[in-house]
Length: 251
Image 1 (tube, rainbow, N blue to C red):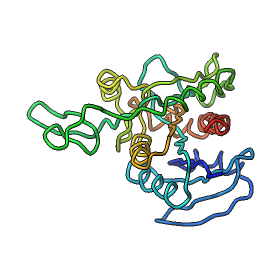
Image 2 (cartoon, rainbow, N blue to C red):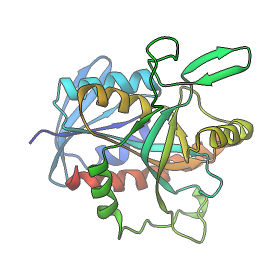
Image 3 (tube, one colour):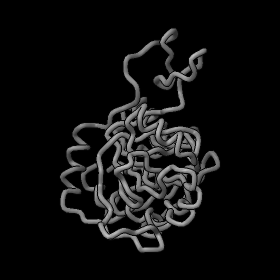
Image 4 (tube, rainbow, N blue to C red):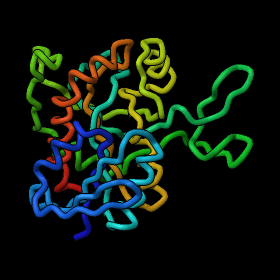
Protein backbone atom coordinates (compact mmCIF):
# COMPACT_ATOMS: atom_id res chain seq x y z
CA UNK A 1 0.00 0.00 0.00
CA UNK A 2 1.17 3.53 -0.71
CA UNK A 3 2.52 5.30 2.39
CA UNK A 4 1.15 8.18 4.42
CA UNK A 5 3.41 11.23 4.29
CA UNK A 6 4.06 12.83 7.68
CA UNK A 7 5.69 16.25 7.93
CA UNK A 8 7.05 18.17 10.89
CA UNK A 9 8.73 21.58 10.99
CA UNK A 10 11.04 21.33 13.98
CA UNK A 11 13.40 18.81 15.60
CA UNK A 12 11.26 18.61 18.75
CA UNK A 13 8.23 17.59 16.69
CA UNK A 14 10.12 15.15 14.48
CA UNK A 15 12.05 13.33 17.22
CA UNK A 16 8.97 11.70 18.76
CA UNK A 17 7.98 10.07 15.48
CA UNK A 18 11.39 9.10 14.11
CA UNK A 19 12.24 7.32 17.38
CA UNK A 20 9.36 4.89 16.71
CA UNK A 21 9.96 4.32 13.00
CA UNK A 22 10.77 0.69 12.11
CA UNK A 23 12.62 -0.61 9.04
CA UNK A 24 13.97 2.84 8.35
CA UNK A 25 15.53 3.80 5.02
CA UNK A 26 16.73 7.34 4.37
CA UNK A 27 17.13 9.42 1.22
CA UNK A 28 17.78 13.10 0.55
CA UNK A 29 16.25 15.55 -1.87
CA UNK A 30 16.13 19.37 -2.06
CA UNK A 31 18.11 19.65 1.16
CA UNK A 32 15.57 17.54 3.08
CA UNK A 33 15.92 14.03 4.46
CA UNK A 34 13.09 11.53 3.96
CA UNK A 35 12.69 8.46 6.16
CA UNK A 36 10.61 5.52 4.91
CA UNK A 37 9.48 2.72 7.19
CA UNK A 38 6.52 1.70 9.33
CA UNK A 39 4.83 3.20 12.37
CA UNK A 40 2.78 0.64 14.25
CA UNK A 41 2.74 -1.50 11.11
CA UNK A 42 1.59 1.30 8.78
CA UNK A 43 3.76 2.44 5.85
CA UNK A 44 4.89 6.04 6.25
CA UNK A 45 7.44 8.52 4.99
CA UNK A 46 8.60 11.06 7.58
CA UNK A 47 10.34 14.34 6.85
CA UNK A 48 11.37 17.41 8.81
CA UNK A 49 10.43 20.14 6.35
CA UNK A 50 11.69 23.12 8.31
CA UNK A 51 9.69 26.23 9.09
CA UNK A 52 7.45 28.17 6.76
CA UNK A 53 5.08 27.79 3.87
CA UNK A 54 7.63 27.33 1.09
CA UNK A 55 9.39 24.50 2.91
CA UNK A 56 6.05 22.81 3.62
CA UNK A 57 5.04 23.04 -0.04
CA UNK A 58 8.35 21.64 -1.27
CA UNK A 59 8.24 18.74 1.17
CA UNK A 60 4.60 17.91 0.44
CA UNK A 61 5.21 17.93 -3.31
CA UNK A 62 8.19 15.60 -2.96
CA UNK A 63 6.27 13.21 -0.72
CA UNK A 64 3.43 13.03 -3.21
CA UNK A 65 5.46 12.90 -6.42
CA UNK A 66 8.55 10.96 -5.32
CA UNK A 67 7.08 8.68 -2.64
CA UNK A 68 3.47 8.51 -3.89
CA UNK A 69 1.99 9.41 -0.52
CA UNK A 70 -1.71 8.56 -0.49
CA UNK A 71 -2.44 11.07 2.31
CA UNK A 72 -0.49 13.83 4.05
CA UNK A 73 -0.30 14.82 7.71
CA UNK A 74 1.40 17.79 9.34
CA UNK A 75 2.18 17.12 12.99
CA UNK A 76 3.60 19.61 15.44
CA UNK A 77 2.98 22.57 17.69
CA UNK A 78 1.17 25.87 17.28
CA UNK A 79 0.24 29.04 19.10
CA UNK A 80 -3.22 29.24 20.62
CA UNK A 81 -5.59 32.00 19.47
CA UNK A 82 -8.88 30.99 21.09
CA UNK A 83 -8.81 32.26 24.71
CA UNK A 84 -10.76 29.18 25.80
CA UNK A 85 -7.86 26.88 24.88
CA UNK A 86 -4.87 26.00 27.06
CA UNK A 87 -1.27 25.00 26.49
CA UNK A 88 -1.21 21.29 25.66
CA UNK A 89 -4.62 21.23 23.97
CA UNK A 90 -4.60 19.75 20.48
CA UNK A 91 -6.31 21.31 17.47
CA UNK A 92 -7.11 19.21 14.41
CA UNK A 93 -7.85 21.46 11.46
CA UNK A 94 -11.28 21.20 9.89
CA UNK A 95 -10.37 24.27 7.84
CA UNK A 96 -7.04 26.02 7.17
CA UNK A 97 -6.59 29.67 6.14
CA UNK A 98 -3.42 31.45 5.09
CA UNK A 99 -3.95 34.66 7.01
CA UNK A 100 -1.03 36.56 5.44
CA UNK A 101 -2.06 36.42 1.75
CA UNK A 102 -4.05 39.15 0.04
CA UNK A 103 -3.48 42.78 -0.88
CA UNK A 104 -2.84 46.19 0.70
CA UNK A 105 -4.83 49.33 0.00
CA UNK A 106 -5.36 52.67 1.73
CA UNK A 107 -7.47 50.97 4.38
CA UNK A 108 -4.79 48.40 5.23
CA UNK A 109 -4.33 44.70 4.55
CA UNK A 110 -7.11 42.62 3.01
CA UNK A 111 -6.78 38.85 3.40
CA UNK A 112 -7.65 36.73 0.37
CA UNK A 113 -7.20 33.21 -0.94
CA UNK A 114 -3.58 32.32 -1.67
CA UNK A 115 -2.86 32.51 -5.41
CA UNK A 116 -5.89 34.69 -6.12
CA UNK A 117 -6.91 38.35 -6.04
CA UNK A 118 -10.42 39.78 -6.50
CA UNK A 119 -9.26 41.72 -9.58
CA UNK A 120 -7.17 38.83 -10.95
CA UNK A 121 -8.41 35.25 -10.87
CA UNK A 122 -11.12 35.94 -8.25
CA UNK A 123 -12.51 33.16 -6.07
CA UNK A 124 -15.22 32.92 -3.42
CA UNK A 125 -13.44 30.53 -1.04
CA UNK A 126 -10.92 31.52 1.59
CA UNK A 127 -8.88 28.62 2.87
CA UNK A 128 -9.30 24.88 2.41
CA UNK A 129 -11.55 22.36 4.14
CA UNK A 130 -10.27 18.96 5.17
CA UNK A 131 -11.83 15.88 3.58
CA UNK A 132 -15.17 15.26 5.29
CA UNK A 133 -14.83 11.46 5.32
CA UNK A 134 -11.37 11.56 6.89
CA UNK A 135 -12.56 14.07 9.48
CA UNK A 136 -15.47 11.81 10.40
CA UNK A 137 -13.18 8.79 10.76
CA UNK A 138 -10.73 10.87 12.79
CA UNK A 139 -13.43 11.95 15.21
CA UNK A 140 -14.43 8.33 15.68
CA UNK A 141 -10.85 7.14 16.20
CA UNK A 142 -10.20 9.84 18.82
CA UNK A 143 -13.53 9.68 20.63
CA UNK A 144 -12.18 7.66 23.55
CA UNK A 145 -8.62 9.01 23.59
CA UNK A 146 -7.60 10.68 26.85
CA UNK A 147 -4.38 12.70 26.73
CA UNK A 148 -2.11 12.67 29.76
CA UNK A 149 -1.85 15.96 31.67
CA UNK A 150 1.27 17.98 31.04
CA UNK A 151 3.89 18.19 33.73
CA UNK A 152 3.95 21.29 35.91
CA UNK A 153 7.22 22.26 34.24
CA UNK A 154 5.44 22.33 30.88
CA UNK A 155 2.53 24.45 32.06
CA UNK A 156 0.32 21.55 33.10
CA UNK A 157 -3.04 22.28 34.70
CA UNK A 158 -5.41 20.12 36.68
CA UNK A 159 -7.38 19.04 33.62
CA UNK A 160 -5.93 16.82 30.87
CA UNK A 161 -5.40 18.44 27.45
CA UNK A 162 -8.44 18.48 25.21
CA UNK A 163 -8.77 17.70 21.51
CA UNK A 164 -10.56 20.30 19.37
CA UNK A 165 -11.68 20.22 15.74
CA UNK A 166 -11.47 23.80 14.51
CA UNK A 167 -9.90 26.30 12.11
CA UNK A 168 -6.12 26.67 11.99
CA UNK A 169 -4.38 29.72 10.53
CA UNK A 170 -1.09 29.63 8.65
CA UNK A 171 1.35 32.49 8.04
CA UNK A 172 5.05 33.05 7.57
CA UNK A 173 5.46 34.81 10.90
CA UNK A 174 5.86 33.58 14.47
CA UNK A 175 3.13 35.38 16.44
CA UNK A 176 4.62 36.92 19.58
CA UNK A 177 2.03 39.64 20.21
CA UNK A 178 -1.20 39.68 22.18
CA UNK A 179 -2.62 42.36 19.88
CA UNK A 180 -1.96 40.24 16.78
CA UNK A 181 -3.33 37.14 18.51
CA UNK A 182 -6.56 38.97 19.37
CA UNK A 183 -6.88 40.38 15.84
CA UNK A 184 -6.37 36.99 14.19
CA UNK A 185 -8.95 35.38 16.45
CA UNK A 186 -11.52 38.12 15.82
CA UNK A 187 -10.90 38.35 12.08
CA UNK A 188 -10.62 34.68 11.18
CA UNK A 189 -12.04 32.72 14.11
CA UNK A 190 -8.95 30.53 14.18
CA UNK A 191 -8.26 28.34 17.18
CA UNK A 192 -4.50 28.17 16.52
CA UNK A 193 -1.82 29.75 14.35
CA UNK A 194 1.24 28.11 12.79
CA UNK A 195 3.53 28.43 9.77
CA UNK A 196 3.03 25.42 7.47
CA UNK A 197 -0.35 23.66 7.46
CA UNK A 198 -2.24 25.86 5.01
CA UNK A 199 0.55 25.64 2.45
CA UNK A 200 0.73 21.85 2.74
CA UNK A 201 -3.03 21.70 2.25
CA UNK A 202 -2.80 23.87 -0.87
CA UNK A 203 -0.18 21.55 -2.37
CA UNK A 204 -2.21 18.47 -1.49
CA UNK A 205 -5.36 19.86 -3.08
CA UNK A 206 -3.43 20.56 -6.28
CA UNK A 207 -2.53 16.85 -6.43
CA UNK A 208 -5.89 15.55 -5.20
CA UNK A 209 -4.39 14.09 -2.02
CA UNK A 210 -6.27 14.25 1.33
CA UNK A 211 -4.56 15.95 4.26
CA UNK A 212 -4.69 16.49 8.01
CA UNK A 213 -3.12 19.18 10.19
CA UNK A 214 -2.62 18.20 13.84
CA UNK A 215 -1.29 20.85 16.21
CA UNK A 216 -0.63 20.79 19.95
CA UNK A 217 -0.51 24.21 21.59
CA UNK A 218 2.97 25.04 22.88
CA UNK A 219 2.16 28.69 23.60
CA UNK A 220 -0.71 31.16 23.55
CA UNK A 221 0.65 33.45 20.81
CA UNK A 222 1.15 36.33 23.27
CA UNK A 223 4.08 38.55 24.12
CA UNK A 224 5.93 35.72 25.90
CA UNK A 225 5.29 33.05 23.26
CA UNK A 226 8.98 32.61 22.50
CA UNK A 227 9.61 31.71 26.15
CA UNK A 228 6.61 29.36 26.31
CA UNK A 229 7.62 27.63 23.09
CA UNK A 230 11.15 26.97 24.30
CA UNK A 231 9.88 25.45 27.55
CA UNK A 232 6.93 23.46 26.31
CA UNK A 233 7.60 22.34 22.71
CA UNK A 234 9.29 19.05 23.63
CA UNK A 235 6.49 17.80 25.82
CA UNK A 236 3.46 19.00 23.89
CA UNK A 237 4.89 17.57 20.65
CA UNK A 238 4.25 14.11 22.10
CA UNK A 239 0.50 14.70 22.02
CA UNK A 240 0.37 15.51 18.31
CA UNK A 241 2.64 12.53 17.55
CA UNK A 242 0.39 10.23 19.60
CA UNK A 243 -2.63 11.40 17.63
CA UNK A 244 -0.83 10.81 14.31
CA UNK A 245 -0.21 7.21 15.34
CA UNK A 246 -3.80 6.81 16.49
CA UNK A 247 -5.12 8.09 13.15
CA UNK A 248 -2.87 6.15 10.76
CA UNK A 249 -5.36 3.23 10.54
CA UNK A 250 -8.13 5.53 9.28
CA UNK A 251 -6.14 7.45 6.66
